[in-house]
Length: 253
Ligand code: SAM
View (cartoon, rainbow, N blue to C red):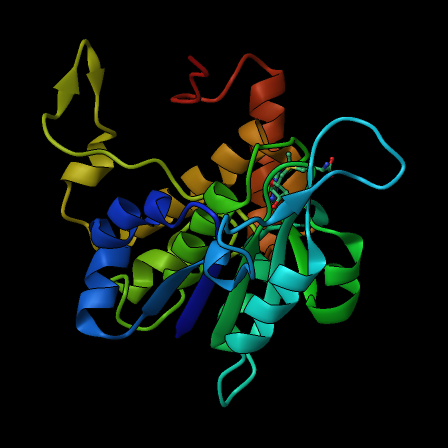
């Protein structure tokens, strides 16, 4: 997987690209990330990338010619899929992450100020992606979110492929709760079944716990989830139990 980034703050990516799974993936060569300073493509010696908006008003706008030059210079032999990070884009979710990972070659455009001159989007952007309905000061953090999410889809980045498929959203449900040592923390014990060594029982518990976590925290997901008849029955039972005074182990705090 190859990801190129265009930004006026390349230094923000330095530590991020060295750490954790992304750093290891880059080291192993399964992920290539290169970050380019947009200012390198500015024609003047002040490396200007912004100008005042037509029509007046506050804030600066990133100028189109610099972006166009940069994006076209980074096209390479195989044209990357060009993604503009923008609060106006489609909101990122698990399905979108997988789709973007499937593209294999991405160019991420990080805006600043009031954003890019609209003509950049019209001329060279394939897709706008938002990481949520709120406005950040720049596209760098959204680009890092995208890089980290997409990199988890690259074979060999997450050691146990199983842990990716079990992650929240993949099956349409949230992940089940996780526990590690010690077995008791401030009076709260690990569910006994997890200490039993009975793998079939542990699997059943995990399925049920994922269902319960989703019902309690994100009931909106249940409408879309592909559930088996047994899971549907289990949900009805959980709903009835909650209505009758709560399900054991479903503390909210
Ligand atoms: N004036 C723009 C608007 O209201 O749509 C916001 C510009 S924002 C201050 C500057 C840059 O931050 C954007 O060009 C974009 O690259 C990035 N950005 C801000 N919020 C974002 C979000 N939720 N998702 C993705 N990118 C975002």
